[in-house]
Image (cartoon, rainbow, N blue to C red):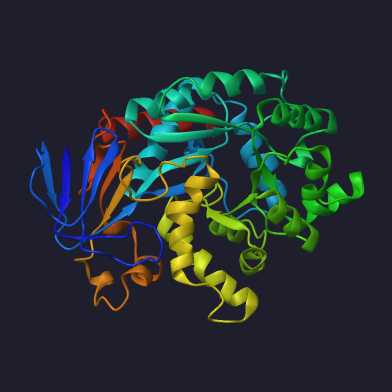
Length: 421
C-alpha cells in the first residue's frame, strides 16, 4: 500500500473543499480515505507537505500523436491549416510514428496532472502499445469517415480494444458530419443500437460546419444525429461552439456530454462555446485540450483558466462561471464523459488515479481559496506527482514510464523531420 498524509484532499464528492484526510492506495484502487489511523502496512509513505490531492485531470478530447505537428501548422486560416498542413502529413504517419509521438504526449499529460485522455486518431495498435507500456489510461474514440476503405472496422475495433487491457477502453465514434456521409452515419446508429452504446464526434465546431449541414439536410449536426438514432444511448460532442436552443434541448434530453476545447477554438478562430447556456440547460460539460497541432499545449491548467474566463467575456458578466464548476469538469465530469465511472472522485474502491498539487509555490500563496487558486493561478509547476492505477508515473519532474525522456524526444524529432521533410 501507499499512504498519502500531511496534506489536504478534495474528494470531488459534494462541495469542493480541501479536507485534512489521508488516502491509502492498495494496488490500483483507493483503499482508505479518512483521518489518520494506525494499522497500515505501507511500501511507501508520501508526505504531501500541506499540498492538495485531487482525482487526476481528464483530457476529454485530444489527438495525442499530433505532437508531430506542434508549432508546424500555425497562424493559418482553418481551411489552409487543415487541408495543406495537417491532412497531407497525417497521410504519411505509420504505426511506429504514432507510437513515438504518443509517448511525447503521454509525458506531457503526466506533467500536467492528466491521468487519462479521450483520444481520436488512427494506428490504434501502436497507440495502445504506447499507453500500456507507459502505464497511462486512455479511452479511444472511433474516427471513421468517408476516407476509410472499410468503415465497418468500427465494430471490430469496438470489440477488440474494449478487451485489450484494463487501461484501455473504446467508444463508438466518427470524425464529423462534414466528413461522414449518411450511409456511414446510419451504420454508426445501428451499432449504437446493437451495443446500447454511446457515440461521440466533433460537433458544431465552426459556423460553416453548421451551415453546411443545414444545406445538406435542413438540420443542424445535432438534430441530424438525433434523427438517425445516433444519440439514443447517450454520448457527446467535441467543441459544441455553435449550438442552437434545439441542440441544447437534445443534449439535455439525451444526457449527452459537451466537451469544450477553449484553447483550440481560440487559436483556430472558431469561437467561444456557450458554456453558461449549457449549464443553465443542465448539460454536463467536460474539458479537453484538442490536439497539439491546434492548441499547441496539452495543459489542463490553461484549459481550466480559459473555460472559466471566456464565458465571462461572452456573457459580459464576471460572475458567469465559477471556478469550482470548472475544476469539477476537469476532474469528475470528464471521467463520466469518457465512461470512467470508477475514476471520478477520491473514494474507497475507486481507481487510484491521483494528482498531488504543490501549494508551497508563490503562485499558490496566500491561500484565500485553494480551488480558485488552482483554476485561476495554477500551472504545471504545481504538479508534484501524478499516479495512475496506483503507480507513480511522474514525480518532481521525473518520469517513471519505462523510457528515458531524451531517447523519446530524439526518436520523435527524427520521425517528425522525416514526415514533414
